[in-house]
Amino acid sequence: MQMFLISDNVDTQTGMRMAGIEGVVVHEAQELKTVLDTVVKNKEIGIILITEKLGKLLPEYIKDIKLNYHTPLVVEIPDRHGTGRTPDSITRYVREAIGLKI
Image (cartoon, rainbow, N blue to C red; front, side, top):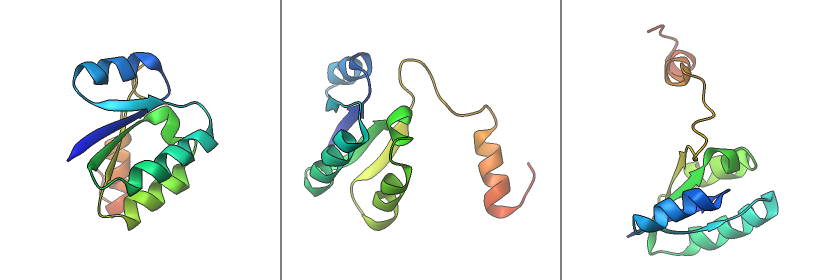
């Protein structure tokens, strides 16, 4: 199985290519949807890496892929500018999901 990157900038794509991961650079929601449709159908791809910025363009569509497809696994990654998440995002997620304050 292969990994595939969908990035919003060339620097992230170049870094991943140096690690042996192929990918594309897109900027618009329609471009992203077209690439996702193609990649999801490719049985050789087991993991899709997508930058957080792009994940915000089509959050419901990406959530649908995560929930309804066994493969590929979709993983949102920070780009070269860092993460867009707040420092307590995991703690907040657990608190909202199960109601425990940690």
